[in-house]
Image 1 (spheres, rainbow, N blue to C red):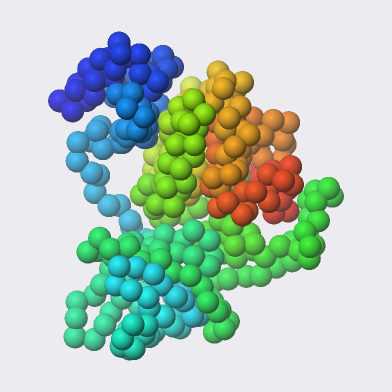
Image 2 (image 1 turned 90 degrees about the horizontal axis):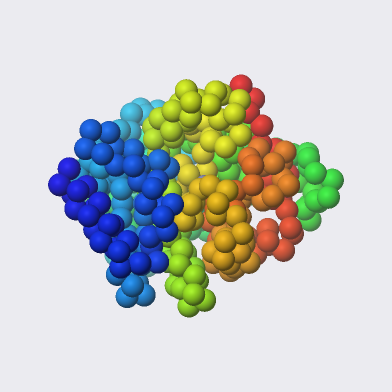
Length: 370
Ligand SMILES: [Zn+2]
């Protein structure tokens, strides 16, 4: 509580200094009291609090709880979907991995050292067993079906890139021809690849969360993915140079957090109305760790200099405006000029140039089927 009070007095002091962080709306959305702490949608707040040209970052859940919430991964389903040849980069150098349904080998490129191991994947936990040592564990985060990272329990991070999928027996993966729902668009091949990895859907290798495709409750990267965070910082610096201050008013939201948020809205507005602006748990793009709301998740953001800058420039940093105007029936959401989704620079540029929504670009729909 002391931390919260300090935060409130700090924001009040910063407000008097007229910092660019402190739009009145950002303050008023933080309706904090000692007995009932409500943070609205916000998980993370960034802004230039002291006017030194650098972004300052506040993670509100951490401030709320003052100590990190315990890990709540409860999945016990063991899936060995990881197969094929993968190349890694990390602080221990380059390693060439072969995964084959629970058994694997890696070779260190520098030394030629080779090691056999067994492994399991449980939700987002990757567990590797090397003979005569304790199991090594890591948090596994998929960016798309050809890229994931492992954050090992010693804190090191290792990025994996698919080299070849030649073992060709990825369990749970399905490749199906998908009909194109929008006649304006036809991809070069006229078909899209749909994969399901641990309950997560990838269309043409792009992770999708919308009203049709949900994420399992166990999918929890625990924050924005590092590359998404870095892309936002790069964009925020460019915006700053153009006289625009950007900050994230809501970044990653866990399944549990979205459940609380959604049920809260349903009790106030009813289910039908809530479905037009808030995702059901498992269907929020915020759970991917690749989506964020910029400055203010309300219609007041529309037409502001920051909103215009974002629409014109975000693709250069790998983001798209995910729910454009006039596409409500395709995306399933009303126009949200503040909500951006990370796709990487190449894909974001391609989607931007196409003028299509992500649903149209990937030939999918966004409709609840329950
Ligand atoms: Zn959003």
